Length: 327
Ligand SMILES: NC(=O)c1ccc[n+]([C@@H]2O[C@H](COP(=O)([O-])OP(=O)(O)OC[C@H]3O[C@@H](n4cnc5c(N)ncnc54)[C@H](O)[C@@H]3O)[C@@H](O)[C@H]2O)c1
Image 1: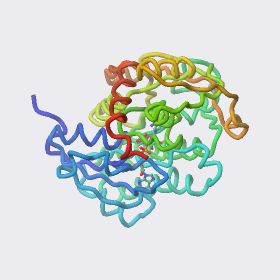
Image 2 (image 1 turned 180 degrees about the vertical axis):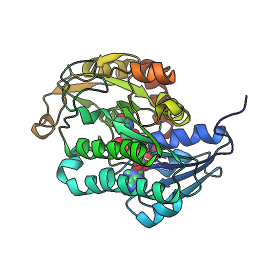
Image 3 (image 1 turned 90 degrees about the vertical axis):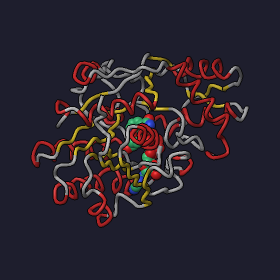
Image 4 (image 1 turned 120 degrees about the vertical axis):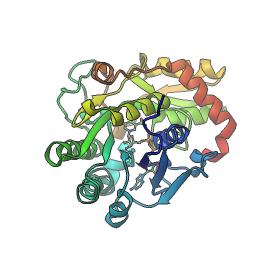
């Protein structure tokens, strides 16, 4: 059967990060022409090793989505834009709110302006986040839940998301957004907890050191990166996704303590210590969260296919093999 991405030109912003690089692998396999844009700012998730093995089959442009001149040029002639570049640390957004504003909000508007002026035919999928809901009023959280972010990152991602929807509604650019929950897998940043706390857990467990679980009763859902990639591709291809937002969830809901136990079980070893939340983290914690993702399931036919146990097993195996590239 003809592959819909075969021969298509695809730009992935944040293409050297966790989700972008795994998406690039899938698209290259399918015969797409892939251009990865990434700033490789050391505190963020980009890593050239993430494209090991496909480096000859993708184009890489080390630039910054805040650079309007680069964006104006790079969006041209693309069929699809997966817009994944982002500052992901909630704590960093509280300590340096302006950088988060520039990347997650202002640059998003200028990317869309570049599309409007130079490539209005492009189909855009934006990586939004469950963080924009803030502390949930009910569970599981549906897309129509009040948006009440608890940190600067959440506010800027919310604005970035809504610029996409507005440009779709008003200017006819085909854009949609996926509200991702904790997404994990091979090629995530594990150096520290800037991308996800699970990253630093994985690093420490692979290094044979104890990791910290803060409290532990909080409920969460997790999407394995391959499932997130499937959702992004399905959203790009569907006319029904246009102008819409969709939650992504995982195969199960789990407390952080049970997750820690599962990591250790899958790794066949390791230990952790439980402690209370550091005060500055507690202030921006969202408590329990898990998504109602029935909307994307019914509209796009997506569902998570990789179980948490299986996903953790792939992830641990990857970092056992490649740890030095991620330190
Ligand atoms: N992983 C998750 O749990 C999760 C959850 C919710 C939302 N998201 C969103 O998904 C997107 C991709 O996240 P990820 O998990 O792959 O994280 P990631 O940090 O691995 O990828 C983001 C990439 O964007 C790049 N980047 C950052 N600022 C940039 C800039 N100014 N110009 C160009 N590139 C820049 C980084 O270098 C990195 O490679 C992000 O927008 C993030 O907010 C991720």
